[in-house]
Image 1 (cartoon, rainbow, N blue to C red):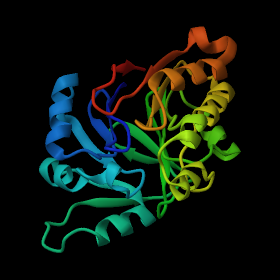
Image 2 (image 1 turned 180 degrees about the vertical axis):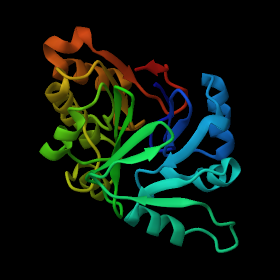
Image 3 (image 1 turned 30 degrees about the vertical axis):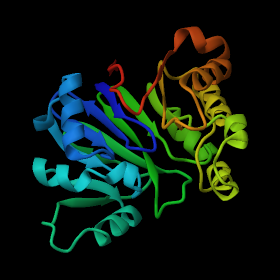
Image 4 (image 1 turned 45 degrees about the horizontal axis):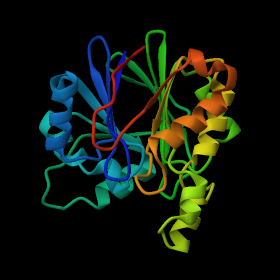
Length: 259
């Protein structure tokens, strides 16, 4: 399994996952044209894509879903709540797309992948993360969550590699330009985004079972890659030297990870 984060942040999110006989996208929050350009940049194959998995209905995760699903003629997989919001907000004149509802805790076969959604905490209809297995390799995708519960940790313990939110530095958020109501929303454990501190604590709990971590969905206003990485290294403790640690960016394709 080859994993490349095509984009990560509040302006758009997309992860490309390539297996032996097919590929998946997790979210498509850039325009279809931008995603195709970034696929070319990383050597990805759009003709290999078998489905688009959607974590939730916010624009930075679905901007290109409609266009790509129709262009590639592939199904969109998301929870019932996410699909309901997404489909109801489409223009009536747009050609229908194939779609498939999934439920947290259930496992679905897509090409050679096994896909298991799990519930997360965010201000969306029915947000989720995904465990994606091909053969003996398991990737976890967990962004846009205000906290990581024990149930989520139990799921993520199965991962060899993890794309995990590290959205904001608490100090930068507190002293930053956002209005008070937005700061409260971001900090809200049930509705917001994962801080560097919380992300690092999560990595510390998972360090003995995985070999690679990608820090994702960094705020361009309330975080820096250096702060996120420093916090993660601190959380990993003695395991920091043995785990490949990467930071995904908003404007560039990440290094491809091979599981």
